Image (cartoon, rainbow, N blue to C red; front, side, top):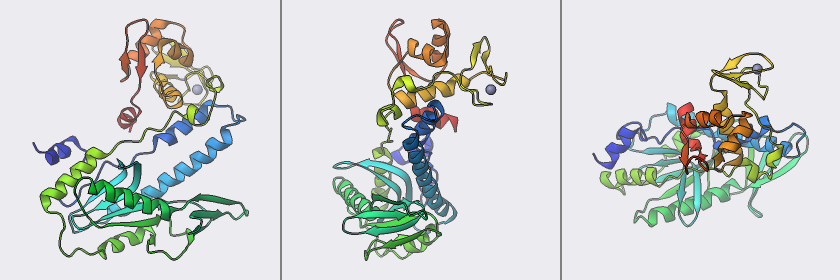
Length: 342
Ligand SMILES: [Zn+2]
């Protein structure tokens, strides 16, 4: 089976020939990690305001990207093309593309923004300035500069594979209700609904890549993609381990500290039971601390006394283990796990 067939078979790509969609966009791990931190830190914790505002920004960004996804899902393009969501490639440096639309004639990189308030993009210094109704003003990275740098890095990426394609870029504002002022630039700023007509107007006179080269380019993109794993939340936000509340959270009422009994977990607050509430707790541990878990860490975090119980729970999960009985440690492949859960 050739590479293309293998990719089709593995489900990495969805349909043959004209439409080639990289795996659906998933909620960023960072979002999940921030949620884990917020449920396990006291609300008055010093890191809480930062976690909350970061969570809102990441969530809005993800929502914005999904708005563009909807357009690509509902619109069919007649030319041969590939669509990649959340593509992370490495050129002279690591770079992430919100959406890449690629054809044998050209590539387009889309940088999606979903930021509320009145927005102004300035050229010098390159910034995105947001003014809220309350008068609060915040500065963000300029999406124009981000996009230009990504286009450059993508050109280098192609060049180092002896491929050459015109590379275009567009900034997409997720919602038509957003107001934005941009300095005079050649980079278009679009709303999702105008993306198909923008694409249709790009020149497609003579194909630059033949079918075999284009297919191998698609394979190179799939294989070159490196999923971005964020640093453990406690390291990123300098949260002390001892500040994190331990215990299994009741999936019904949200109270932390379920009690282990033979068949599972019992909530001391609402009295309901769960067979597998420890799974989320262990996932929280890896999102927050990220390194190798020992039996002792597991006992402390799940609040179980017996080493044998912790061992059984750890062994029942798809974790990687290394070492022998006494010093065995476990790691979780966070992406693999969340893929199974969705
Ligand atoms: Zn409960």
